[in-house]
Picture (cartoon, rainbow, N blue to C red):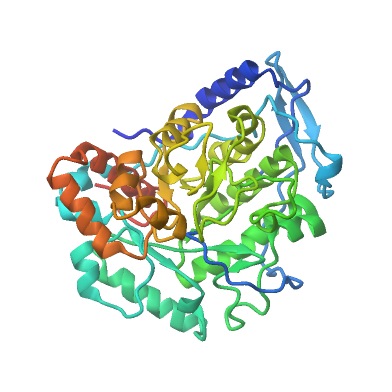
Length: 440
C-alpha cells in the first residue's frame, strides 16, 4: 500500500536536521514560514501582467515557527523583494508550517486489481499530445495523460481548447492528466496565445521583484484558474532550481533569490496551487544549479552533496511539505550522488528523494526524448532504464516504441510487476486525490 506523502512531514523534518548537523551547517535562527520539461521553451518578452478580478484574500503575513527548543513564536514575513546578493543562502532549521492533509479517500488498489498489465504500463506514460486525435490509440495504450505544448494552443479560442481536451477525456477509460508548462516568462505554452490571455505571464522572478510573495500568490491563482478553465489539470511548475550564476541556462526561470527565499516562494506557490485545486510538479530535482542545457546534450554537476543539502534541497522540501503531488527529475549527471547515470536514470537520486526527503508522491522524468538522454542511452531503452531507476511516470515523444519496450521488459522479468504496481497505484491515488477518478 502506498502511504500518502503528506503524512511524512515529521520524519522529513527530523531527517533534514540530522543531515544538516552532519555537514555542520545548521543556522542559528529559525526562519519564518509563509503561506502558501520536458521543456522546449516558447520564448516571449515579459510584459506587464493583468491579474484577474476574482482573487482570494491574501494569506496572513504572520505565521508560527517552531524553535529548536520546541516552543513557538509569532514572526512576521515581508513581501519586499530580496536581492540575493544581500541575502546569503544560509541553512534553515525549520520548514514551512503546514496543515497535514489526509491520505486520499479512494481505493486505488481496488482499481489496480481490475487493470490488465497493458493498461498498467500505459498509465506510466504521459506523452506529447499527438498531432491528430486517435480514440483507438487512447483505448489501446491507456496513457496517464498528455503534455501539451504551445502548438497545441496556438490559434485556438478558449472554446476550441476546451473541446479538444474534452474529446481526449471522453475517449479515455481512466481520466487523463492534461499538462502544460506554464511557468511564466520564457516558458508560456498557454498565455503565449493572445486569444487565451491578453499578455503572456511574467516570469516568477519578475513577479517577485515587482510584488513579492503577494504577487506570486496572485500570479499562481490566475494561472491555476486559467488552466483549469481550459481543462488543463496539471501545471508542470514551479521551477525549484536555485543558482546565483546569472549567466547560467536556468537562472531566468528561477526566482533569482537565495535558497531560503526560494523555498519560501515555492511554499507559497504550491500552497496556492493546492488551494485552487490544480496539480503541480516541482522541477528539476535534485537541482539544476549552473549546469548546461540538457536539451542539447549531457550536463555534469560536480558539486558536493553538502551544497545540495544546504541549498538546492530546500525549495523541494518546502514544496513537499505543502503537499505537492509530483516531482520532475532532471537529466543532469550529479556526480556526488551518481557519477555514472543522469539523475532521471539514477537509482541513487531516486533513493535520496524517497528516503532522505521522504517524498511518497509521483516521480516523473523530464522528457526522455531530450538530447542528453538520447546521447546517454545510445541504443538502449531510456524508458526501461527510467522505470528501473524508480520513476513512476515517463514523459516522452517516443511513447509507442517505449511502451512496447517497457511492456516487453515486464513480461521478460527485467522490470518486476511490483515496480509497475507501485508506480500505477501512486498515479491512481493522485487522480483520486484531485477528484479526477472515482474511488474503488
